[in-house]
Length: 67
Image 1: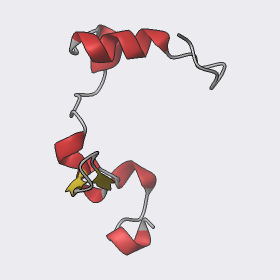
Image 2 (image 1 turned 30 degrees about the vertical axis):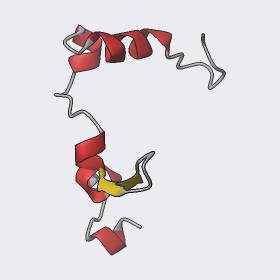
Image 3 (image 1 turned 180 degrees about the vertical axis):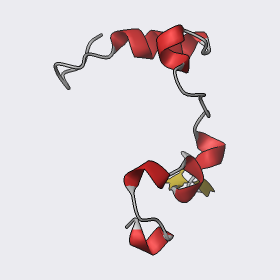
């Protein structure tokens, strides 16, 4: 998939390389759907409250939901 996008390494993958189907059925670029964050923004807390809550819910030890 990376090669088809003209990329040679996963670190080159950006949101605009993705196509996402919205709830309306429309296909939109990932850059429109996903919020761009600067490096370290989640760790420093410099993000909107919704993303900050999700970051604090994440558990690096498990994929199990953390409600």
